Structures are given as C-alpha cells and as structure tokens.
Image (cartoon, rainbow, N blue to C red; front, side, top):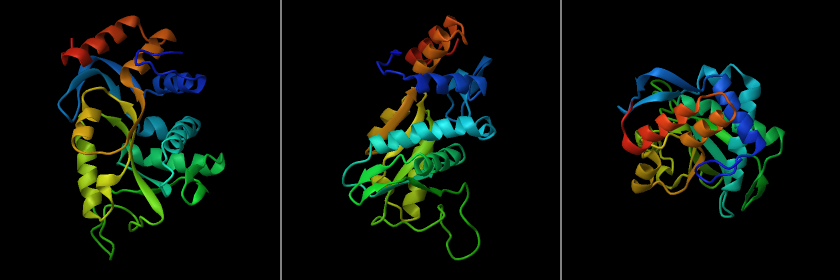
Length: 237
C-alpha cells in the first residue's frame, strides 16, 4: 500500500498499524490533548503498558526496529547498541535486541555480521554506588555504535535532553544515530537536524498511519482531514 508520504507499506507495516489502533498506542480523543511540548492534538500516542502488556505486538515492533537498524548500519560501524530514551524507548530497544538475536537479524559491521544489543538509560541519575551515570554501563566505542531509540518525536526537545545526558556520561552523543518509530510531523525531525543529529531514521509518519487506519475502515476519513489540517496549520479544530 502506498501512503501519502510516498512510502510503501508492506503487509507487516499494515498489521503493525492495525495493532497500534487495537491496543490504543495511537488513539483519537474528541477533546484535544496537550503534549509536554505545548502542542495540542486530537491524536495521542503512548508506548507504555499499551505496548508491554502485549508481547506478540512488542515482538513485531521489535522486528521492525531491528530491520531498520540493520538497513541503516554503515560498513564502518561497530555492533549497534540501542539506548532507549526513557520511558517509551526503553522497551523498544530491548525488544529489537531480543528479536535480532532470535531471528538472526544481523548488522553488517566492520567486525562481521553481528546481532543488535542494547543498554538501559535511567530516568534519574544513580544516587549511590560508584557508577553514577545516566546509562547502565560505560561507553566502549571500539565495540559499539550507540543509537538513540525513541517511540515518537514531537518538537525534538526530549532528544536534546537525552543527548546532553549521554554526553555528560561520556557517550559519543553528538555522533550517535537516532531511530524514531513515529514522527508526529510537528517539526521535531527538522529541529534535530538543525541541532546536529547526524543520522535520523524514522519508521512511520503519523499522517501515513492515520491514512492506513481510514483505509482499513478503523477510523472515519474525517480524522485524516482533521489531522492533516492540524499539521499543516498548527491549529486544532
């Protein structure tokens, strides 16, 4: 299926979109919701218990992410090591690593074909012990190419905050690729590029997801029209 952005959705992409709707990861609210960024929208996304309560769905999304990482690994890269931006990105990074090993979705690196791994980023710095870092584990750039992973991007601020925190923990934050599952198309990807994020990989644009939901008969066509208007004008009606 071809979607408005020109991307071709495979049958697995369509199934993932259907599950995003069924488990209310992507949900429509009659009353607009205000995001942390201050943007208002009828459409809200959440990848918390809506994802982790359904392991088979989490596995499918992990496969999507693993394939995206492998497709965007460069020959000069080391083993991809995913760092999910908490809280939404944490489960996604783990799911992709587990699927990579189990299904042998391997990254072609300078050290050969290698599965994806991941590390856990904290929401707060560790207040005790020796390693008071934002991430479990010290960086090792001779072994890993570290990736940011997150569920959505709105204005990009949470990615800037995460970059600052990883830089503080001596990770190569300014050269790390970024993987975003859903671009909410509110300027976040453009802001990240302007702020120097070097390699940004996006799974889906939110308008494409809405389009597929209307084609599946799961949402009325009016929602696509309303969301398109929101994105193009910045006005929620």
